Length: 276
Image: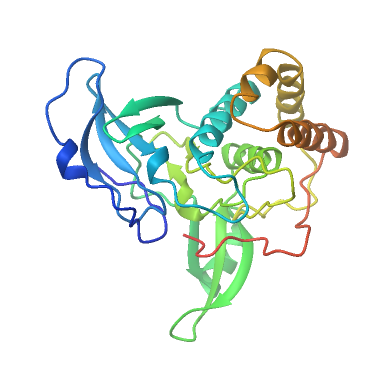
């Protein structure tokens, strides 16, 4: 089993050992913990499947997001992914576990041989960029004073994730939050920092700035806009504020009207740190 990567020290005071006990059908049983995650994050078994469990109790307070709302934002991200029709986010729902209610998400076994986002020596990155297989995000210098370049693959599935990030105002699209699946699909995970009413977009997927959206991408935005006018909009009210819903509708409409990938905006950093 490959552990999904996160960031931070994961210290929340919750102890998984007390929860590693047999469970009844439909009961979530913790089997491990992802220590690298910023908030309390566990691996669990539920009805014969592996899932990721993030209890609301284990969410660390943030200065710019209301306390106890990250699980609901993760569920909202999944619902938006479904409305777009792109399967960006694995099945995600609110469930109950040993540490109380929280986000539950179906576990994904990635292909460790694939890297949708990578940090390459700049000479190697230049060759890949010239071949058209990757897009450049930024240049940097590593701890050995060697030139390196952050790149991501140039694929339709990752473009859709980049559109999804713009619409959801994702403030934390790290490279480790892109899961490379064996069949070539890419899942996005860790969407607790989304849907803020203020501009918060921080992502490693900047490789298509200014390029026009495809007809498929625009059609996805139109599907989402229609869904937000109906049942989806009402469902999201359980997790988001009126201002956040209004901002979501505005981002969706604006992107569909411009029909191009936007550049970074605002005074904050455009790329999250660390990038993985």
